[in-house]
Length: 292
Length: 79
Image (cartoon, rainbow over all chains, first blue to last red):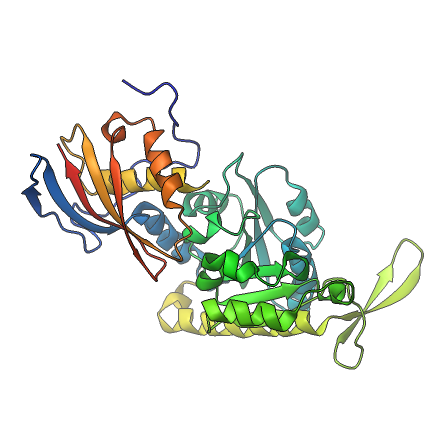
């Protein structure tokens, strides 16, 4: 009899996801024996998130040549602002971008991405604290990624739960704003361990904070010494000698505005561009190119 | 608290691979939970106690820790 106070499977729950996997799949094998209490002991030795992994592999195949980055962070670290800053730079380099947004409620972030005139889809998790591979798989039915060179997945703002789930991405990137404290990597190590990139964001606020960027880096590298680190500001429009000038018409007051993009944003965009080139070359090399 | 989702994934994995065929009750699950897995062991135990699945109602979890990001099912004991 079901436990009336128990938890039922939500919309993200899966049933029968393990198609194509036999009873001894993924290296697992059944060896049974009797325990002292009369129970049967079964050796399993399987990834506990195997059903998610199976769908993540399907996603990876669907992503094709596109380089896919999964952003993890606390709420309010500036993930969407980072996309608003880096996407125009990548677009100006001729890359096609698509974005999958994840939030507990509302499509507010998708609306911000829509303003960039790129394909975007909003996953609303209705309370679930992370995206899983199945949610992303479903989103691909509603998002045109055929021409995408880069796909950004903005996970639910949460530095713990999203770390456990492979979505089929090429890499995870953790975003940390300087307001969050130098010790954040030590308090939430999983996100920094699993990511290949760390973006230290909101550096324009450093003059009014006690934050120590070198300490943030030291703490993060103590968890994962391979992290590639960028320091970014989505607000700073200075540093003309190193930044790239973008001239845009301001339709509100008919003035022409010169914006100098933050050097960290440009460095991050260059990193993504290079990874995109490598992914496309790899995809072509394994025969994926014949389907293009 | 994604441990509920993880608990459901564990059941899916056992089910999909045939480990629960004909099983009425799972007494214990031995899991490897890496330090960087992002899993809270207490929450995971709580999740199993509250899942609507009678087979797992009295399951006890045994954890092996290591310095990885693994979440792995090592062994189960069933009736």
